[in-house]
Amino acid sequence: MVLQVARLTADRAGDAPAAPGGGDRGDLPLLRGTYGSPKVFIELVRRGWRVSVNTVAKLMAELGLAGRKVTRRRSLIRPGKRPAAPDFVRRDFTAEEPDLVWAGDMTEFDTGEGKLYLATVIDLFSRRLLGYAMGARHDAELVVASLNMAAATRGGDVRGVIMHTDRGSEYCSRKFKRACRKLGVVQSMGRVGSCFDNAVSEAFNSVLKVEYVHRHTFRTRTEARIKIATWITDFYNTRRLHSVCGFKSPIDYEREYRATLTEGLAA
Image 1 (cartoon, rainbow, N blue to C red):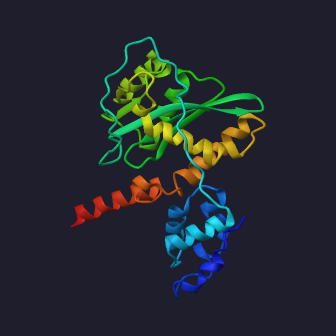
Image 2 (cartoon, one colour):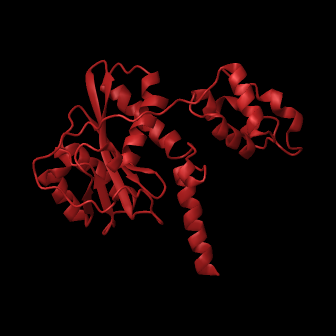
Image 3 (cartoon, rainbow, N blue to C red):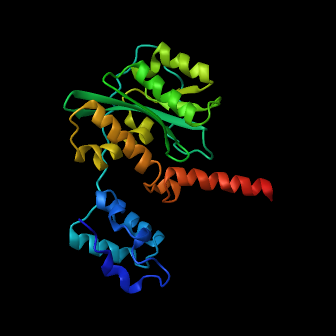
């Protein structure tokens, strides 16, 4: 279904391209059922259109288009028996720069071959997904793999980063604690049974499921891995607008931050 952007052309910028984004209207995220009218409005303005948010909302309502609603879900992780780390985050999910605080969690999906588990690591500054790992078992090796990928994404030196998770057995395991010590990462854990103590990771899991996973059927775990990884790298990190990032994608938000730092040093 294509949003009738042509109906918005009456007040289009004179030097704007004939179609938003230089030609292909079909790649607008709204076609995925992802965005509500506020983000659709922002996306269109950035592509050269002059239109009010009320007009966009009205047209979307007429066409029966709406963004997917994200819901909170219980975490997959079971409480661990080993001693937990202190909570250094205390529900303050903001960070003034990259690599101050990361958040990790696990979730699961159905495939034709059975469950597929996903472990993630997100930077609280930009909401960028730095590391992820998928497998047929949810165990310590999976969360360690996601942490190692996040460290590699940041170039390897991540000493001093706070790694915030729930108190699941995988994150309390010797393997994960050892991996954190090796990287110089400081563990932080929320309270038992409170999804709000790891709200950013829980929100990402819901976004992934509502906007993508629940709209597809995966015959095999391999198919699910490839398609979910593609959604993460080609859409979530690079294109999906995020309110915390000033309605920019996580990677664009980080680029602007680093460019500002460079300009400040050059001044």
